[in-house]
Image (cartoon, rainbow, N blue to C red; front, side, top):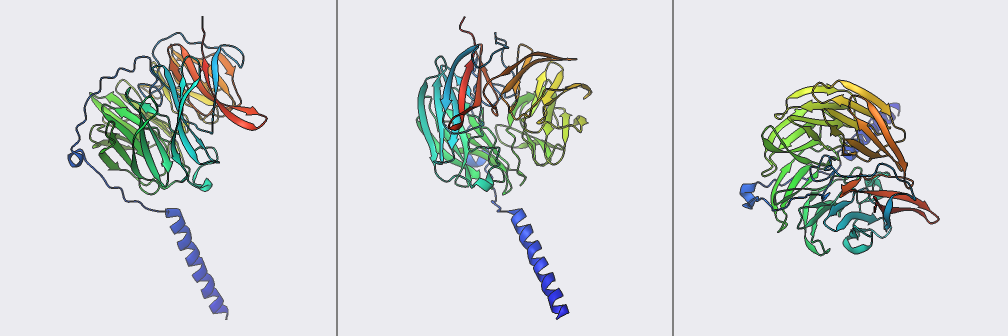
Length: 440
């Protein structure tokens, strides 16, 4: 009897172990790779100069850098606000500004609806609201309690608007015209969600590109912006990671750069072919890669911690054990600046990796900074926006409070700063889109 009970316990333990392993592995979705030779769709240049438009995640260059312009450094709930508009539902995607309109994505968990909304950039009046998906939301256990079902920022090539959303177990890519008509929808690929979908799409020539690292099998899919046909798709690791990609010209060529899956990777944005992969960073990352001249810099994530600098061929120049996880870093002159999730700002020399200074700003951070006129603007989760100068030393210029929280990164256009903030009210939290600027 004793031996039988011991045997039963061993069997139960073995079954439990197999169950845990199976649950941990989750579903697997083999990625169907497509090459440009398979699709036969040419990649062509588009006649679009963003100018003062803020046309995607982290602006026209994808690195948080805004063109030189007159931008206010001080405001509050009653000062230097041009307008404020209510936003239904919830989202962490940033606003974008294209021409005379401001666009953003949002989602209502109660009704299971995902939208794109357009606002007049001069008045804040709602121009249109387009339902993208109804129903088929991931379960509550598949989305981080801090996240939303509209985490991504819209991208625009001047002709169309693009957004990717997790719906029905897939990443669904949608293209709209500036008037809000849906032009096409197509599946980028299946998606096994651990904490939700975070990356934003980016445009490159006639392509719109959607990264989707996930535990079922990661991939990057590039669509033809006009037709919605897949031009290329490449497989990545099965790491659940959350970084957006960026295209930058480094080392004499355009490189599609993305962190995650314990590597910093470079691809040819026109074909998806791998240029190089450098081990490092972390399994899961959130921040977007930045560049400075011939240097490529990235930081993150979980569970490993690293900030690295490589050259245009992926050769590691320096490494630091500090990590900037949710917010993306930014380049200020010869310096790399980042604000950790816990509110400590770091500054490194781009060339050497030497820490120039570190400063506790206060609060916790998810939003990524922008830089205008040599000043960095970044908001924390309490609604405070810090404006500071970053160089050999830290110089705080202003600290401004607006609303009760701020998860989304700002947009900058023609002397106006656009923030998506949370505001507490009698019926609970609601979101607002705010335009900060001077009418004088």
